Length: 188
Length: 127
Image (cartoon, rainbow over all chains, first blue to last red; front, top):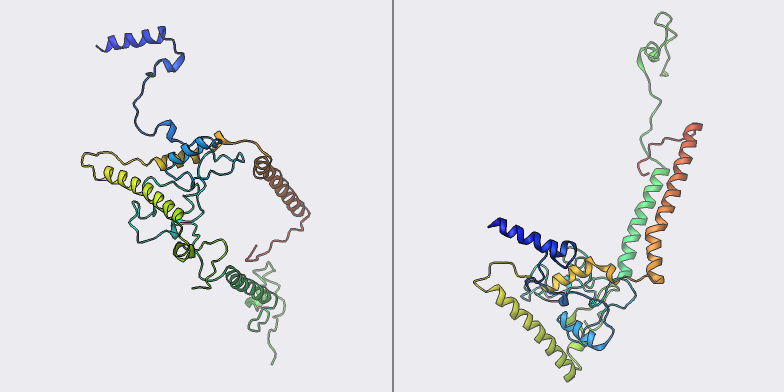
């Protein structure tokens, strides 16, 4: 049985009209999963293309706004507001609560940046100028003080180090027979 | 709350938007209703698949598939313009040369100092 199938396969390869590998691949395939017209495409130029793209992304035609066509690689992907998932209602019953997103909702181009572990675009409690002034002021002050401390060190008064054994005469390579006079490190 | 001013680079929350409460024209209401209808349709599809007792496989999200496809294939929609070429040159070509020259000159200077014996080997904590 397997031999028959193999023979037919070889015959298809040799007599078939499609070149190379496509001779082995069947002409029809199952219509499962995402079909090609559901995937993102090129920038929409006509109003019909815009309407079709809006329908594809589950948005209203008036809401749908593609990224400007500057050749940057966006295609017809919609330009959504740059708001992070922090700003979404925490009490609404999202389909995916950790991502605060519903199934089928169009995703922002930078969705992986806007998740709740990362960039937060929600309003801050204090204004930006106050925040920068406080942070940079503190850091600048601490850097300046450490610089001054390095310039003007303050420590307990110390004298020169005193070594035993005749100022380490033998250890420093001196002749053990000829010992010089003992150095006096004190004054009475 | 009347004098609330949002921080730059941040947004005003939707509940503090005065347009939510005043000036709701019929067009705006209709727009909100259409958006709600789209949302409800998606919710219905998801719930049907979620609660289907005969379902054995994962629920596939076409929006996620589209997002992944779009992020993975920017070059099909790429077009060399002034801006894109400039960015490509700035990030791809210039660093090669700049870094090469920086490191080379620094290393050469250090090598000369070592050979001349003038290199100061400090014990500083920062740098």
